[in-house]
Image (cartoon, rainbow, N blue to C red):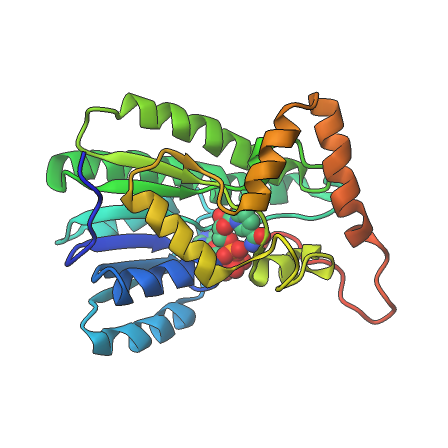
Length: 280
Ligand SMILES: NC(=O)c1ccc[n+]([C@@H]2O[C@H](COP(=O)([O-])OP(=O)(O)OC[C@H]3O[C@@H](n4cnc5c(N)ncnc54)[C@H](OP(=O)(O)O)[C@@H]3O)[C@@H](O)[C@H]2O)c1
């Protein structure tokens, strides 16, 4: 199958109001000549990005949606495909919870499952069918995480969500071989974005630290893997090496190593500091 091209085509990007999603949207417009359907809850942020990109000739549609809610994936699909073909589905929106899993309410767990997993499955299913019928040669890019490759204490459900995406995505990519669409699962390690600030992991892992990627660098790697129609990519030499080494260890040892990595970021906050934010 040929490389994926976004020139003059629409890409839908979930989680385009911040971080990696915003950078991928920028690069799709400015480097790859694509048009955009931007999805997130903060519509004003999407409109700000539209104002930045439209003068360059990019057509931008903004859809405000809360993907933690059960029916939003279907509404986003209907609105996005009304009168246009979506050649690329970039399923990036995601949230984490950093802390003891038993402090994480079940309602919050359900919201995370919907955002990180259910909406991804729903949009991938609908958009891959749509591409096979109306936009052959298209594809889906699923943003997973390195955390999905190992049990990750203090982000236990987040890692579980991403493990599902890794396993499901690579299996589905194999099923799609020979068809006119592709699926890429991209599993980065730490990226310097709002996610770390919101969850509290940013107290330990900061922009510029070894192993932390800048969002624009990570976006470039994600889009490059997507266009080359790779099936599973962990970007960054250090993440790749960690993955190889951890894979040799039993799962209990993997969990102990990951717990050790994150535990110090759980340290009590200085008086007056806000506690880590939970899933919104
Ligand atoms: N940061 C990291 O270290 C890291 C590492 C590995 C993988 N990842 C993955 O990379 C992806 C992007 O994360 P990021 O680091 O760029 O995080 P971010 O800066 O916090 O951005 C998350 C994006 O997801 C959107 N989002 C969150 N909840 C949503 C909801 N309920 N409905 C609709 N949109 C929602 C947010 O928009 P609104 O708030 O406006 O809705 C925002 O645009 C995620 O899938 C994440 O798991 C991140």
